[in-house]
Image (cartoon, rainbow over all chains, first blue to last red):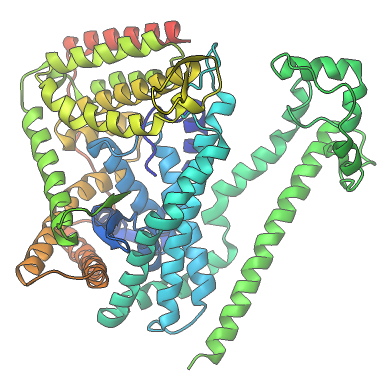
Length: 363
Length: 277
């Protein structure tokens, strides 16, 4: 799971560093707002804890043992933002001082395990636990599922990052320059190990820690939910603007930059239309882009049949009434982002509603 | 991430071995950092600015001979810095070769390309592209790992952290990293003590579920201790006048040797970048 140096191209590494930075910034701002002057000791000791639990051996069924990242347990007790920072710092110290995971790939490892892992664990935990009592057994199941889901999503992301390397990066002879396996090999190889053994280590640690804390120190589990409740009720959190500002600015910038797509020459590889197969100039472009392999002489029948099934509302990234392509690109980006945000707001509302129903029925 | 449990060592012994390994690695590095060698003489900031580009360029290079030259350079620096090659081989090269070799082995057969050889009994064909891909991966991983280990082995760790400020890392992050590193040892010792005391109270062998309960209970206890410790540390910092602002002493001084070596490293990095395109 810890990608070493040399497995990812520097451009992939740079992209993932760039993606991770706004999350780190937001997490830092949120944790600082909540913890104020306690931030430094809390982060330091929590990161040291995350580092140490990565070294615990967890016995698994079948006589094997595994190491857990501990992202599920850290998210349940510390919350997603503090967990994101603590696991990232632990990964940095692992990479720099203990050579476990690369320095160039630190952004990728943090993005997969710390950032996406913490967010997935948080949402899974909230969705399954609802607002049940701190000592409810449902919380143990929720934490176990959170750990299991988080590590598997992280593994899937890792596999995708490794799997796209041979598509884009080859030397003159066609040999892959970085991780050599394509997606159809990388994903099953990675997921097989994580859906079974490595995932179980995370499941046992997260579920086991919550079960143990319920018996011995339930205040620790309550503390975080109390902090969460306080956070939800605070006016600053209600606006959500201050802490998520860098993410919104970045999103807006990306939306405004979408017309850059018009500058790219030709059609994206594999995104041809059925009629392109009968156009002489397009055929030359397809041949040149496919390593001089000529496309079939007539349009594939399946493509011709299926292409009429669905017509997009904004064909070519512009609704029919917009004549300026750059404006059409920006509109499409806004529409697409709006759809995605709407979906997540709806999901959040559903989860919140279900949580309040649960809290109403729980004793 | 998993290891087959063929021997009779239980979870307690294995975790103890992991903690001892980490402590040993740290103490060994501190010993090496005190020696009188090339890298030890350099300002830590210069070391970071000189070595990080070499790691990136080892990842960028598209020619095998350029990566091989960078690896040879790493070995030469290790020799000039009194780092025993046996230690490097044991701690870095063997581990990377085993892991990356295992990962890249199937690529020999799975990568499409003209066949150059075949396995005697199984009849699987090794392709030229597969062989190149495996060599690329192993050499890149070995070179980058050697450079990063040299950087850390030849510098007191607290200095590496302070020197990270040269990468424009916020001072608060540098302080957090330094404290994290410090408390890793405290928590490792706590965990070690916890497991030793547990071991001294075990008679016979624990079954799987019992071992799992022991491991997760230890994580739970450590979590409680961590939260308590963070409160104690905060109060200790407050009692010494901490008000949320953090400062780092900037005691590094560069001399002509640092600048000459920096120029040399940057030139090598540029040449490697140029020829490796």
